[in-house]
Image: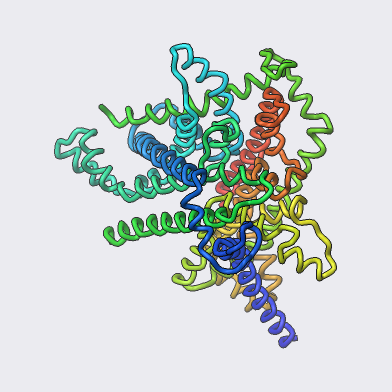
Length: 281
Length: 276
């Protein structure tokens, strides 16, 4: 009996290890294949034709990809800048000020994270098409697709920045701010001179998160540009390829480069966090 | 100037670009599609009644719910052992293992789906492997392909909350059970699994809810042959024969469905907090 039990225990133990191992293979297999194929010499993205750097060379001369890349970076940078300011301000107000209807406001600002992104995207499409564009055109102005996309990205990023900054704000020792107030600083000075510098790592993490989300976004971008007409970010460019008969090989190279870019971003975020922790310790 | 002023810019932005758009979805969903494709404003629940028609109900509804449920179950079955093994390691190894679970998910969602597109195509080696095993299974353009993509896309959302509960788990309870003669199997089902329920439920919600609104995975890996809510909504807005009012009703129906799931979840969270 005892031997059987020990045998069963060992089997369960090795099954656990096996399952974990297989899951990691599952997680990294597609990424590995993608990178491998980006070095293929074939003229087709889905065929292996020996090693070459052709795909990367083609990538730099493909005007569509280059402009999609630029669009992505421009959108992400502008959306991140504004969302970081708005989200941080929101976090400060919700955590440090006395506010009426705090509960309802809190629930409301968390909503963009919770509801399906496609609903928000549909809402933005209708808002731009039915309300904002007609309204703006009466005074002779227009809303270009990039502006609509940036506005959409700001909208979903605000809540994420707010969550990240607020988490840190809650852990922050309030006595420093109170001491500054006792020494005669105005509340505004306290925010600028004490709270914000202490929050810097969290604000940077929030901004990096917003930047990553913006680079990654498909739904809002797709709907805000009514199907990517006239303005394509990298994800939209990738999506538009599905209809083509042959996927060009530079596609794998773009995907691999995007992968490397995201990895660099997360490495940066981790570095910032670690530095702030070691400084605190 | 007080800190309270800081509330306004963000709040006004969200009211304008989030609350107003969602309100417009509601208004438009009550209108009708005019023969020329434009919107005829009105106040009727026709679009919601049309959602009950078999064309919208049976196919997409069961596909979405079914695939979301299957994805959730598969993520749980795959993710639980992983979360458990990670939680039992030493601190340094733990963080490293967890980091490698999250890492792929910082890459672009479309890139990851595209990678599966390469792997699952009929002349790919997964299909070849299956064929040589005597399984002539269509992967791309079938619910199976979509399911693989969905599990891949949402697995970490299951592993992370599971890990969070298992990491705080007091494993001396298991030792006590073993001392009292329980087998590993028994101690798992009688102790570990029940006590990790909050993580299981949180993970299930985090997987189930976004999958319900999925559009890219079924579109790219299903080749348009696997209708889900998201695919249908996109079709009604950006397809060849647009019907914005009906699409708006679908989007709102999806939101209500998700809200019901979330409300149930938060209620349970509150109850368990009262008990614990």
